[in-house]
Image (cartoon, helix red, strand yellow):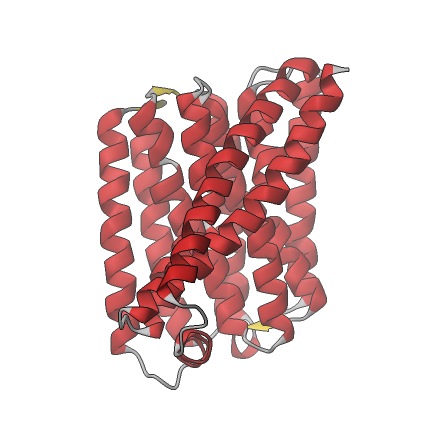
Length: 328
């Protein structure tokens, strides 16, 4: 009977989390616009951060509840899901074209952030100092992305999108503030409920919290990226679809992984590096190869199929290891 409550908690948690994130982003974006902040800055910082808000809040709540492994699994698992599942499905819907600016800017940033994470996780312990490094890196990256965006052409697809969407406030400051508060409250409550449901399911199934974070929680918190990427791809906004995934992965490592490190430092174990981090790197390399060597930067459905197969195989491995009792 208790298992049903855990499942209901998961479903409600994910639902309110997505709705809360939407209200939070809309409120914050309109407050910023009412105070004269550039639409492009709003799009790349507030909106970019907003799409990672579910992962950040869930990771923080898990650490506060004494389950840092759930938060760590969420960070790494969301990155695996973003490329393997989100991008894989998006590519099956429609092929994407990656421009040279994305190859020169977003890919190196994500590669550098992954290298930093590898260095910090190498000793199989995520400590307070590691969290500080990640948080500082997150703040610097946020401002760096905004700076580079301001230097880029206003005719870029991202510039047009953000200017069209955020050039005029759609809410009064009072309404926007209310949306911001309601959205933040929804995120906080939903993350608490979701973590309770996720840890409960882990206990019932007899699997580790890391596995639950890598799978169920990671898939659920990656739903905003899936929706945003598919919609952007169908609108022929390929830069936005790819940029959304790469940007989210950067935020997941720097901001989401920082939460358990700062709140409840803990050991990470061999499996995280040898299995999970390796799959994350593999998917990133595959994406880069397809983007770099595809004709005209085009990534086709075959690439999407391969990424999805890697993701399915990885999750099958996790399921098998949980079944035979291999500790993660």
